[in-house]
Image (cartoon, rainbow, N blue to C red; front, side, top):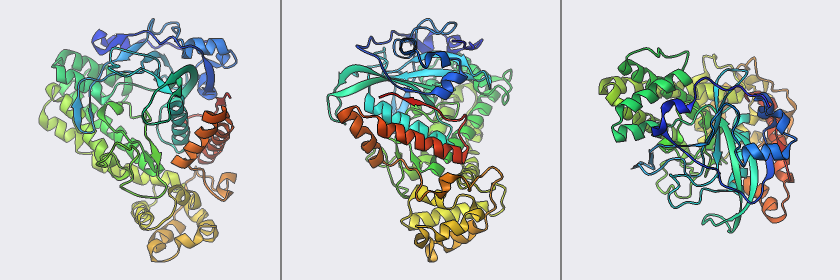
Length: 483
């Protein structure tokens, strides 16, 4: 096993930002999922066929040479459904290790879920259900295939414990999961220090985050007031890009609390997520989101609100005027990113002068019709290169009449992106790949009843085929399902 250890990691921030913890001791370790492509890329390829070695690192969490001697449970606060909560932190996960991506040089975090109790667990058990892990596999695989900047599910290991949960049949099976992404510093990490009035550590965190996650975009030697404003502005751009990609994918995260936004601009931590069946702005993912705060159509609003809370946290390092200016560009960036994200999903040239009109007309037609969300992007992929297919295919009747007249006309004349491949065999299937809640439940049912993993294996293979058609994944997807 050969990995690259970065010169700086989360330990640079000092003990105020984390607690050292011990992993849980699980009764058994049954490997269920391995992200083969990322394992090979990061130097763990030799462990793919070594069940003991894989479990030692990703269930028992033996230290990776050169990284942390013990895992770190990160400390943070956050607004949860609009209410500030100072009593949170990594309650059932921790930062296991940080290494360097050998291809990009970027810092990569191994974060866990279901790895045991921490000082922030409160009354919870620190565990993850196997169903929750399977759902996260499906979410990250689908989002990655659709071009969303998402965490990657790296490993899932069943742990042999029986868990009691109020929102699924209990007792239920347990698992420990490892996710891979470029950072676990959250908006809530800054909120916590501002809440405590620890301005010195707040500045340390700001400078570490700027140097680590924006090495080429920020002047790390700038005065703290200028750096704070520039940092908020750039985080806002990444948040706008991320939110636009969720919207284009028809994805509803479900819980956009400020502790669920990291400052590296990646989507992560999938609980009650959903994909849209149709374009319904009021569609919610979380059964407990009674007011629709995080409904599909309100995700841009929720993202901007969270960005403003980051700006609030940094006012003591800057000033109110600077922070207000730093967040004012979010809406314009969001609008631009939304058009570009829709063009990518449709395989259309994003420089096309009518792209904005097309995007507006498309969403209007989708809201007013009963077209399947994913089906629209599937049918019209390639713009003018797919117009005849869309208008002569099995859903052709849905695109007729006044509701679709303007959008269909624009799409029929939309120039294909140079990167798009509408001739890929995937686009000649009758129907697109989707990830609706009934499909998720259908995949889980045979696992729960008979330990039959075949439907999950088939679905992941189908998603990877879709990913090859879109060509948007960071690296060629590859994974192994055991069971």
